[in-house]
Length: 189
Length: 189
Image (cartoon, rainbow over all chains, first blue to last red; front, side, top):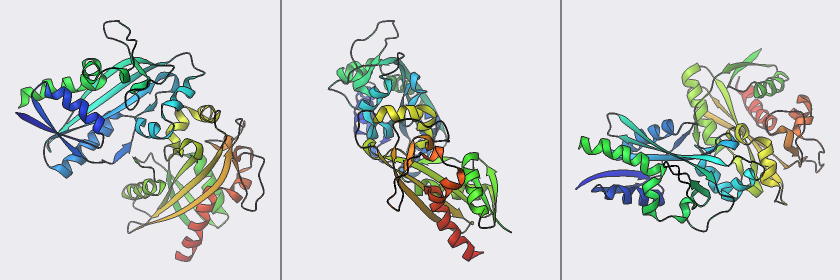
């Protein structure tokens, strides 16, 4: 069975990555580490630097990820600073900021960065959606307020938070990036 | 006349630093550069890394600064991410986030980092205050919404934004950090 190391401090992300890659018969090893991130509006730049830093520690091929929620009426806030914003003003703060806005559209984006010590490769996934007017009881991160729009034109009525991990993994930004990664990776190994 | 290089991309900050250090007969040379910052809750850590990075470019003794507004009811948001928050949700967003809060207290903090290639030295200044319910017409950054509380117990009725640069420089977080720096620096040179 093939395997890959996922360097992250976020166990919820690990569970999604593990559930997704498990279907492709890839074993995911979590390397729990708080990697220093640079301040940048670019998830690609942040993920690339994190992958290089993680390889420097682990010395084996690995993936890292970085995810941001880009709310259009808020000039793409919280974007690549989503983690900080979540632990300070939280989803309640996001809803307050949108209370005076009519445009509630947002983009959820994940960047997966693979590094093998020689080079870094980037895979991205994005999902368009809207910010719910209420916070769902279930889910982690921004999942309780993000309602994805289906690529088939179908509008989902549930937030990510109210979906099972399997359902979320069919459509999510994170799984899109992982799918691109796995298509490339399975040819490589 | 002694001089020091101030590495920054922010001309408004330069004007304050120049006005302040000019009184001590120190000429300030602005080196306009957008320095990469790390993601950290610590202004000290960010400023230290910036100072090291700037020395690597300029190769002469210099100061950098990093400033954050820490709003207590928002778990110290926007803190060390003040620049990003200002250019996305802005002061309007801050007032919206505080509309449901009774505690409007905040701390404005500046860290000055000096680097001469051999070592880094840190100087800090903080001012307590409250966030105004309205945005003043004048000032830059968070100055139009920050009302400082005097150390003499006197409550100022103006925001930083409504003060002259000279008046602001008597009391501000930035000038406090600069005063500590200059006391040390004038002994050194």
